[in-house]
Image (cartoon, rainbow, N blue to C red):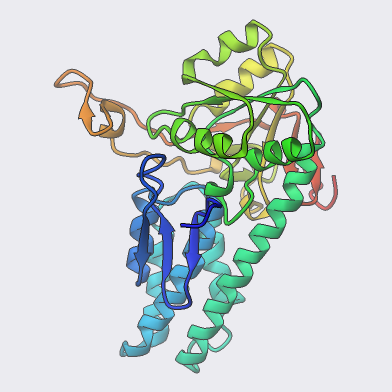
Length: 342
């Protein structure tokens, strides 16, 4: 594995996905040779993070088109694969967005020349990956401008290179500020039940050399009330037209706490995470995952026999709690709605 952490790599014939369930202790790659393999790594959270899921799904479409070369009806095979891939996870809009654009813009030869369509979809996925890299770098530079010497920045889940094709969003902004020489520190929430903060964000922060402390999700209010946080920045898996957004479960309560304590609260995401087809966060579907993810820890049941759990993977934060949304076009602030320029 290269020194730089990457969420996925395209070899030209298959998609290699870094198994994030094994991190930080095992650095192993999963080889996806079919669109069903890509569905599985998304569904099972071997790869996660809205931008990374979108890029992976686009490569899944490329694999489907290659599989279709031996199918009786190649076009229908690809269309069925698209429906299947989009069903893997419902909340992050990048997944459906990438699949839909693969069909709209990525395969003009679909239905005419199956082999050409397969090449076109692979090329489209490559362009999408490069766009994600470019957009996240631009976003990170805008986000870095929000921070100054002495800031202690709180964040939840993982929004770094592992959550995107490269660089990251919220954590990318923190990384960029640190690279610019700003004297900052980070407080990372461990992020139950999958511990993306403890396993992934902590790993990225250690590798970057950024000073940080890890806390449990329930400690955020204590830290804010004791003046130990100056700013909060989080990612976003889907942003509605009015600026409401879905992110990892626990984000909403951070926004409420930040508002109460008078702290700036920012979301960071590329425009591929916006869903302009919906008016508000009330229309965002929230993924409900298996209750055993909450009832168990590291594969060992910790709740009493007979106990049951709720396990929504995301919550929705209303736009009025936001200080701004960081994108590759700049930082948008209230009133949200004109998304052409900040």
